[in-house]
Length: 201
Length: 79
Image 1 (cartoon, rainbow over the protein chains, first blue to last red):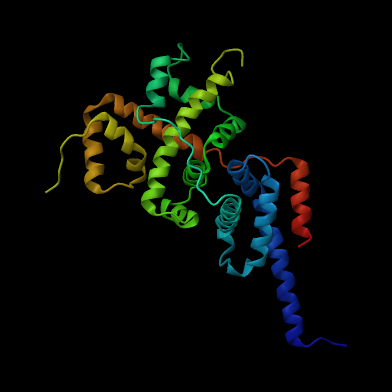
Image 2: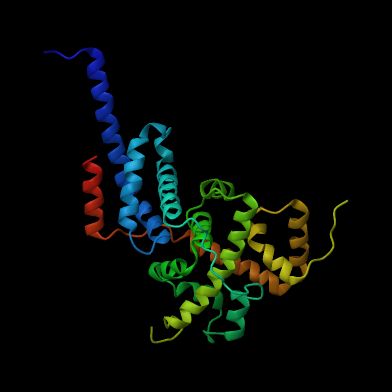
C-alpha cells in the first residue's frame, strides 16, 4: 500500500533528523568526552552517554547546527549537575585553608624551580600535560572546579555558569575567584609531588 | 566623581582576572589600571594571569581512547 504524503514526510523528517543528529554528535564526541573527564574522576563515558540520550530527546530545541557544541556541552553540564544533586543534598564546602596570601606567580619567583630559565612562569606551565592538568582540576571541590572548567577551559560566560549551576552571579564570581587561587595552589603542590620540576622528568 | 585612589597590590592581584574579563565596574577597572601603571610586580602577575588563561583555553579537547569512542559511536548509532 502506498503511504500518504503526510506519512512519507513524517518518516523522511524523522530519518533525516536522526541522521543529522548522529552526524552532529559524532563530530563532537572528543569535545564532550574531554569536558566530562574534567568534571568527573570516574564515569566520564557514562556521563557523555546520558548527555547524548538527553540531547537526542531534545534535538528539536537546537536551532542552528553551528551551535551544536555549546548546546551539547550545556546538556552535559545539566546532566552532571542533576547527578550531583541526587548524590548529595549538601554543597561540598570542604575547608580549603587560607588562600588569601598565596600567589603562584610570587611562589615561582621565590622558589625559582628553573634557575637557568628566562621564561620561568611560561616554563612552569609547559611541564603540565593534559593529564597533569586534569589531576589538578580533579583535586578541587566541585563548587570550585565546575565554574573554573566552564569559564576558562570551555569558554562559558559567567552569567551562563551561574544559571546552569543555579547560583547567584555574585556567588559564582566568588567561587571563580577562590577556585583560581585554589587551582594555582594545587598546581604548585602537584608539580612538586609529581616530580614535574625535576630535570629527570 | 571617579575615585582614583590607589589600591594595594593584594587588591590589584585579587581583581586581575576579573579585570581581564571586564567583569568589574569601570571605576574598579580604572583603579587596577592605575595600580599597574606603577607596580612592576603586579604587571608580572598580570602577564602570568594572561599566560595561565591561554594555557587553560588551549587545553580544551583530548583524544578519546579507541574503546570509548567505539562504545559511544555504537550508542549514537543505536538511538
